Length: 309
Image (cartoon, rainbow, N blue to C red):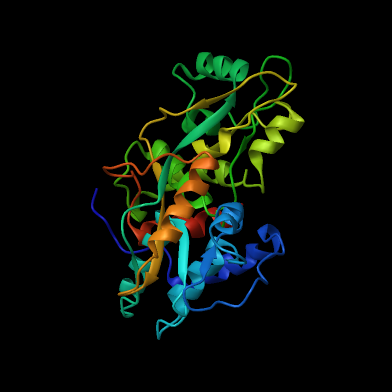
């Protein structure tokens, strides 16, 4: 499919992001001031970064992305290093190029770790949905059945991490890819039928959907999008939660280090981060395409998800 420009401009993207910060920010964005060589990490990678460096700066991935896109002189990182999923790095780099700003930031070295986006669903509900949809449960099936009652009376409800979080953008990209049946989608594919289905998925954003499933049961959430690294603990008193990793097309989350152009990541810090990510359930860096679209398409997707949260 032919790529086109972003669905909405950077200004709209920023306004939408600001509107949700109060909802999803956990209050930890007032961390230590950025300093040369320091780590800057999303709130949901706090534990990983704190194992690699004392007092890293912690804030929403979307907040950092906006700062880096808007900053014209390239000083937003102040010599620091942003540890983040590649989707956010791609958004920043491509949006700055679209706005004809200098390429002041780049991904340094290979990814630190990887994990696929999966669909975590209650086993019994997956069987019921598969019978209803006539195929294995996927995002399109869940969206089509949104709000309908299953056997036992529970209604279909789908969760997702907040789009402004570290992994939320990648999960949304995976959901969109499944609805559109391809990973090379563009903003002109966001038409009426897509918008109707995607808005139902976007409305399921919440701070910790896996914990919601585990603690509140299938009556609260039928399924959620999540990265495999966050499915280490699926213990529950309500039944079995099954991570489905083969929803097509598949999308992978790579954790990368973003630095000011020409910068580097200390080898010791890289090793510490990789150990911490492994302990948190992330796998060794994977090779090959990650299934994500370009940064400007991700920016448009982010805007849509924010408008329909």
